[in-house]
Length: 141
Image (cartoon, rainbow, N blue to C red; front, side, top):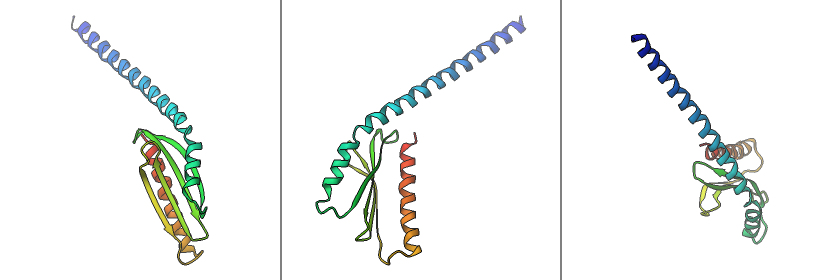
């Protein structure tokens, strides 16, 4: 009789474990599908974002590039990653903007003063790395 009770408890515990594991796996797949679907929705903003940044600089003093448009689970919104290179004036800008609200989530501007020294290039690379790290952070759940 005692063996039957222990056996039933073990079966119950295993059943609960299998149920929980199935639940977790199922909802993780659903969540990943949601992120994929939201990335597709966000990608529809690429053309309007390109038009917006090209029209933002009347004198065309910058080379402007939308590096990517992606869904951020952290912000539950679409984000555009913009790089502006005003090489003539030595100005570089890294911008992450919430497309739906217009809010700048990340902004860094670097003004080159000395020229093309190795120190200047390191500074530009550091700004670029911070920009890329922020993109990774926003893509995480």
